[in-house]
Image (cartoon, rainbow over all chains, first blue to last red):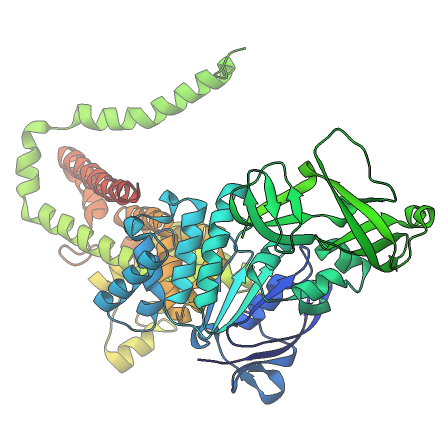
Length: 353
Length: 266
């Protein structure tokens, strides 16, 4: 089942022309990150077989799924591609158990075997108690887990997730994200995560492909894309400092020895997200009454993107700050300069890892 | 501020007249009914034959309407093709057509000398006019559009992405249609069946024109009722009451099953 994905997807959808090349290895989670209307869901539908490419191809392992030049198109029911849809799209007239068993029944597995394998999967996602419930009686987080079990029960070669957390409230999202990480880690095939939320991409994916107006504008590891956004657009979208650490009593301890004071944080392993725009730089240590973080840092690199400037900073807490060109000129910053970076505790978002 | 809207008085008056307009005929039927003769009339062999014929033919017509009408509704709702509007108009024309005209048209098509009927007879020896099968054809012809329109409307509301999800799970188009699409529109399907069946059991004009009025083979309850009114008005009243009772019983029966299904969800 260790099959790689290779796809070149060209098609026109209304006003939007899509031309996207994607590849992913078995076990890898690739996040397709972009705003609404960028063509993310169209790409997912092509991979699932719900749409065909006009030019290009889709290959999974040595199997060609779609190639108009060779007159090949494998319909979705023969693709072995599991999909977790946005809004989950559970079958309302079936119980949670029957929903999960659907894929097996559709493939001709007898009812008893199908239901017993479905029950195993429901148990695996922690919903054994809800087997007899219909989707209307399930919460958003429970529906998401039923949708995941339903997609995984048939042992697909590739798993596609369309905004799997977008329909959930913030509290549920944290919990579901953690469970999802566990299930994705256990899945041996290619995994593609479609999302508009950089935090989903950071916390769930190994690599990201940023899509804008039907084109991939940058691909790479998360650290790479975050540190070196190649366009204003990518910087806006993904340029968030994500700091991993262990949280105790409102302070996140970073492995390198630094600390981040946060306003409100769960205990344990967390990610602290700091927007580069919320970091201010000064030559002297600032004096301020509000709870804030101040770190002595060294300027490593300065990157101008129009009238905004990204400043890469080295220190106990590695950061990227974004300041105006005017502020840069006022500070006369050069690589190697020592400055103070500060940010208010209330401007830091914390997610459990 | 009043919480309930107070309707203007002309609306109240007109709505009351409408209610009376519907209630009065039933009241008349109940008031004039010769209650002492009900058992006798229902015991008559001709009456029982007509009743049984009506039940059989109308249920068959409702069944045929489902088998042919649901796929037709799906095509009209989901498949874009040139002339779809024209096809929809053609397939639902019999709903607004005077039933007698429908009967004449069926005769021209399926009669012994009709454009299709002559071959049915020459090749297969099938003669539809003046047969029980003819009754079913006439009933289906006028009843199916009710089901088609009801189910088509529901299918238009149906989220086709759910069907997509079913296909990615390994369901063929036909499997998904049977196991996902049709169950999703079940309430509309039930409503459509009830409407089509009610239209079929009350069918008069197309039946008498196309299938005739032969006791035992084509004389259904509406035909028997009309005939009785000329000879024995009391019998006509009893037959009418019977039709009301049968229709009412089926409606209530379906409603219970329907509600029972909904209750199982909660």
